[in-house]
Amino acid sequence: MRLDVALIRAHPALSRRKAREVIEKGQVTVDGATSLDAGRSVAGPEQIEWNPNRPARRRARSSLPLLYEDAQILVVDKPAGLLSVPSSPEATEEDTVLARVRDYVRHLRPRQPYVGLVHRLDRDTSGALAFALDPETRDALRALFRHHRIERRYLALVAGAPRGERGEVDLALRDEYEGGRRGVARTGEPARPALTRWRVVERFPAAALLEVELETGRQHQIRVHLAHVGLPVLGDRLYGKDAPRLVSAGRQMLHARRLGFAHPGTGQSLGVESPLPPDFAKALATLRAKTRR
Image (tube, rainbow, N blue to C red):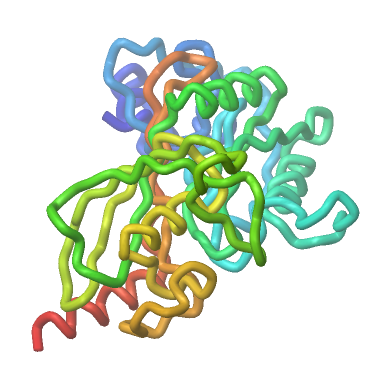
């Protein structure tokens, strides 16, 4: 059930509005960790405590939609077109997700404004992006990524007709970029292992909606792998420039839909989902309309 509902069951005098309010104030903990998300799911065995005497957390407004927030972790909904991190160490004034999250945390926690980078998304990929709010959590989350214990699911609109309903691409990516592009490694090239799994969610004339799961997380991995097997991401000007123009897409139609992992502070399973952005939903609607003709 939702955390606010569980809190009301434990404290029947609380209204739904009041329950959400005390959670957002930072007065409620789940298994000892402050939780600020009234809508998060709790399974039942967690220990939920409300301390009305705890000082309310500072109010601050994020310039990015927040998908999840507690005292240790922040997950934002990254829009397409915004860099995750600066393009170079010297680009300190660049508008990035990291800069916006740091600004939000500085207002929220001026005495402890730490923000730790955990992973990245390409500039033109949208969706869920996580940050750590203390060094210990950053190290723990990075370890989960390193040992492939993070569930990362994407939605991709691709050109072509997938053979079968699911598949995987297990091909190493070369370390070096050629003309700003990565690629599948040739024999003897310095490379890193990369494994991408996909399944068909919906088929259209000459296109498909895929759910893609990353086993590894190399830069451009999904785009390179799908293009290599003849399923380039629609709108991808780097790896899919020769693909048919089936929709009007101003960027690659790739969306980081879901992040799932064991919370480093509580050990409880945490799943965060990002809704489809308008441009992706519009492209999907266009393909569906073509299918009905």
